[in-house]
Every structure is written in structure tokens, then in C-alpha cells.
Image (cartoon, rainbow, N blue to C red; front, side, top):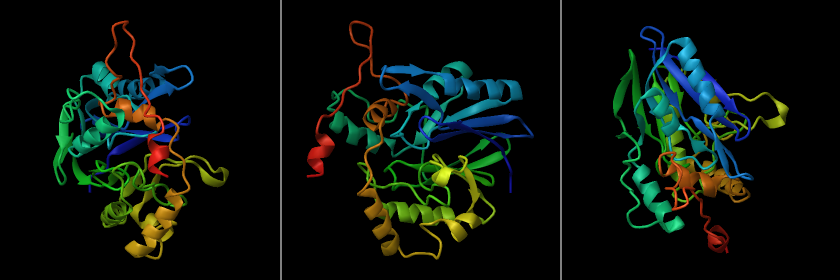
Length: 292
């Protein structure tokens, strides 16, 4: 099995992991889920996180051939467009992003000419599709549940599972966002756990429970043995009872209503108004009214 070199980058502000992986034989690589900084109090974006990734690939001599999003994130902005400007590499996401765009177009009451066809990315991957990064084969697995558009990139022996699994001591990610489903999430995780035991699973977030250091990697075997939501091979009903009960106690992510508005645009800010400034809009009382 091919073994890419994986470099993780931690963003403490959002608890997010970003990745660069590359083929050591050809020095071709890809960036996964890059973060664009956002200060919600100042309404200001920044590129410090993305610049760390850019500095790394330049100093390591990696030719970036793809900039990959696993799904439209609810807790950080995507830096994919900014990195494309710097590197010239194409951007990609799963084809079901079109469903997320349609869903959130209604929530934000965006105009009819807002594109819900995924054209904000250069490529929309289908389930089961494969592509190459150097000599490393990358397979796309449709992994819905956390969102209806989530995908996993399996690059050789490395699986980038986004927000489907957490580290074993945290279990799995929530499934209560619009378009989410604990049933679909269970099925997606079963597919991930069917990968070879030695597969390295790289997660999208870690909140470092009990004061440990932030971590991003565990094998499929480790998840089978120790993941608090999947050890002992629970049934779908058992898993969904735990997941749904937990989700009912969770607040929305702090940046969700800002982040989705940007990320359904492929990481671009809303189009500037006549004064040259971009603005975010919030659907007031939408989620409150749906929960009552």
C-alpha cells in the first residue's frame, strides 16, 4: 500500500486540523481542509493559517496538485480560493455539495441567481472516483451523516475522514446539522472501519479532552478497539441512541452561521456591495424557532 507523507497543521482557535500530504517519490502533494482565519468580533479575515501551509510546501519542495475540501465546514472558513491564487492548483469537493448549497440558499434567502451547481470548485468528485497525487492513488468515499455532502479521501494508507470520526477518546462527530443524519453517519463510519486495520485515520477536529495534547491520527484498528462510540461493535440503534442524545445537548458552533455562508461559496466572501465591502447576514431566530 502506498504511504504518503502527511503533515498536520493545528488551528487552536477553531480546534481544526489541516493537512498537506505528498508522494515522496514525485514530491507532488495535496492540501486538505485549509483554514482561513476569521475574527468574529472584528469581522476580519486573515491568512496566517494558510500562509503556514504555503511556507511548508515551498520549503519542502512540494508541488501542490490539488486543494481539497471534504465538505462545507460549519466551524471555520475555507482558505481554498486563497491558496489556489498562490499555487495555481485546482480545488475540489464532493458532488453532493450542490444539495448543501440548495439547503442553505433557502436558509439565508439568497437570490435565485446564487449558483447551486458546485461551480465554485474546479472539480466535484463522485463516490468511488479515484485520482492520483504523484504515484499515490486517492479514492473518494461518500461519507454523509455529519453533513449530506461529506466525503473521505483515502490516499494510499491515509484516510482523511473530516468530521466523521473524532479521535478514539472523543468518538464521532455530531449529526444534527441541517442535512445531517445519525443513520447515515453510522453507515459511513462502518465503511471507514472496513478499510485495512493499518490505515491511518486523520480527523478534522480535536478538542483535547482531559487536558491532553491535541491529536489527529489513529489507525482503523485503534478505532475498532478504543473509539468510545464504536468499541464493542454497537448496533445502528445503539449508536444512534447515544449520538442523538448527545447532539440534543450541543449548541451550534460559534462560527456556523458565518462559515456556511462563506463555504457554500467555495470559501469566497459574499460579493462586495456598492461601497466595496462584503457583508454576512444571519437568519435570526431560524434555529430557535425550529427547536420549539
